[in-house]
Image: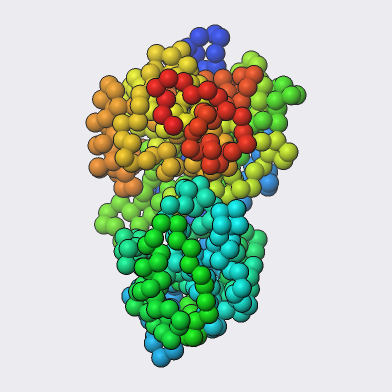
Length: 543
C-alpha cells in the first residue's frame, strides 16, 4: 500500500503542451511527478540496501513497464548487485608482529579490512623475501622474482614503481604486483613506504584502515578483483627497519637505491618472520540497478547500446540529526532519474524507433563509491552486444532556466560534438568546464564506462543566466543535507528542457552511421580503449 499511496500523492499535473508536432512531448509535470515520489520522506533517503531504495527501484521499473520498454536486467528489470560494508573489528586490533616487535595498525603499519573472511580472525605467519619493486615485466627489463623462493612467504616490496617508468607501464604494473606475488607462491605482500613517500603515507593512513563498501564477486572479492595473496600491509621506516634486521642490506640502503632513476634492485631473503592479524566486521546485502531497453530498429546496429544513466540512491537517514533526519535527495539525484525517465517516455512515444538500442539505467550505490555503475560496466547486460556511449545525469540543478550546459568529458571524444549539435537545435550552448580543478569527469558514474573503453559524458546545467549562483548556493546549503527536498524552488520547465536535450543527444548517437569515437592521442582513449578506432581531434580540443 505504501507504493500505491505514494503514487497517489505524486499524481501528475496538467501536461506541458507538445513543442512541435515533429518531436515527442516533454512534460514538466512528469518530471515533477517523479521527483515528488522519489524524494518523499517515506523513502527515507533511498540509501542502497534499504526498504526506501527498494521502493524507488520498483517505482522506476513500473514506469519502464508502463512506457512499454523491455526489461534489461538479469532478473527482469533488475540487475542485483552484491554489496558489503566492512571494517576492522576494534575489539581485536589489527597488528603486525616482527620478532619481538609488535606494531599496532595506524601507527607504523597500515592494514585494511577485508570482507572475504567474514568476521573470523585472520592470522598469517611466514618468512619474508624482499623482491625489489615486485615487477615481472621482461619487456621493460624487470624480472624481480628471478632466483627467489616465495612459496609460503611474504613478498616485501617497495611501494609504487621505479622513477622514470612510463605512466602507462606504471599503471599496468601497479595493478599486477600482488597477483604476480601470488603466482610465485606468496601468502601476503608487505609494502615499504620510504622517507620520500611521506605524502603517500599520510593519504593511505586516512583511508586504508577505514570502513568501506564494495561490490563483491561470487567468490567474495571486493570489486571482483582477486588480490591473489591472503593479506597485505603498508610499513613505514620503523617497521621496515625491524623487518630488515640482520639482512644483507639495511632498509636505508634499499630506500637510497630506490631514489635513483629507473632503479633495478636485486631481491634477497630476510632473516625475520612476520605475522599479520586482523578481524573484519562485515554487513553483506544486495541492491538493484534498474534497467529498461528501447530495442534498436536497424538489424545491423541494434546490438550497439547507448546508455542514459542516473543514480537512484542517496545517503539515507541520519538518526543523529536534530529535527529533519531524512536526506531526501530531490536534486541529488531524483532530478537526474526524473530526467532519464522523461527521456525514456519520449523514446517510447516517438513515431520512429532509434536505429541503435537505448539502455536506460537507474544505478544503485553511487553514493557508496560508484558501485552500481562499476558492477554494470564489469557485468554488461547486453549479451553479445556492446555499449557505444554513456550520457550520465547526476544532480542537474533545476532551479533556473538554464541557457548553457557543461559536458564534462566532451573534449575527449566526439560525444562533445553531439552535445553541441543537440544544444544548438534548442538554443542551448555548451560551455567549457568552469571548475577543471575539481576533476568532475572522474567523479561520477559515467567514469566506470570510460574505464570500460566507452566514450562518455557527464552533463550538467551550466553557469549562465544565474546558474553559477544557483549551483554554488546549492552546494553550500543543500548538498547532502536534509534541505535537498521537494520544497526547493524547482523550475519544472527546466526539467522538461533538460530531458529534451538529453533525448536529442541520445537520438543522434543512436541514429548516426558511426558510433562515437575517442579523439586521436587522447589519454583516456589510449589507456582504456587502445584498439578502438579514433576520430581526428578538432581544433581547440584538449587531449
